[in-house]
Image 1: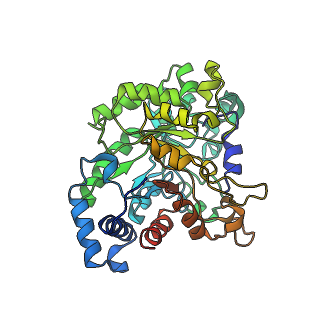
Image 2: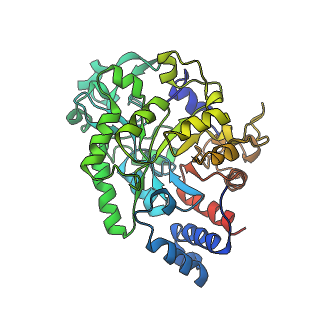
Image 3: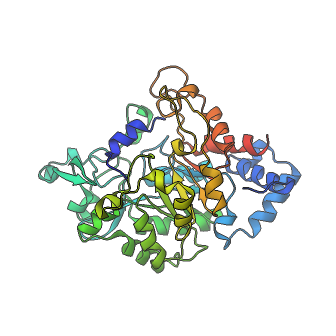
Length: 402
């Protein structure tokens, strides 16, 4: 991801103009309730009719077919299963997520795309338990950060398929370790086929939201991501403007490259305000994320993308104690140039919530996440990435029916 920070540092730190009207509110409320189990929640006749009306013609309408706020399963349902596994992806759909972030795309030595949070897989697989791969452990500069471990680009796909996925943050999610070793590493090709199968079986369009990881780093290794992603999407007929595949990256030039290759909805991810996207660092572009979220920067992004994925701190900053302060003008400014906003990431556990929404000190205990959702939804964001999609759906139901 962008900037000079290591991903582990960011993970440790990351603790934490829409239209109105009765019909729209009924539709959104119905969608939220259906996602969480409409029969159980007891939809009103008006809500059912609105959902049926909008849902019947949803296919082929692209982003406009999605409920707002959109609930995006972050790396699947990673609050309940090891991330970027078919177990996590499947559960996200079962819980009602509108979109599944399947997956973070990194290449293998032989050019295949696989789904891992980072190219370094020591923390998300059992590779350390494989003596045959002990010599592959190495130290590399990943976006300027010295990183030690095992890297996907040093393995063939066949070799990676001998590994099993494990929980990335067991201290926060000890319950997820129950599933260590149950699933292998998915390929992007497998995800695209899974998407089609799930769409058929569920009778509604399943959406995915892949991220291209470290594009500059991999291009310098001769493993360019954009062309590989575009080729896969074309092969599956999913490269159009209404295709149910949103593409995202922390590197603006990667999104610009994709804009020339496919017509899919595109989103620029934005890290902390003082960070610089790595492609900017590599090319000597002095701008920071703070420059990109100005009105001028947002207008530029709107020239080649449909949305932004800002860290939640860009929407509502925190003070020195970690409490939320006053919202910025980012939502208003982005909407003014036609960009949607899908910030990241809401998680139920205390360490990942703003300080004023934590309850107790248990590292895997839940805080007042509904209060956090309520505060962020009030800014007008168009959706949010969440590790617990079922919680997000209930929060959306509260929001649209308030």
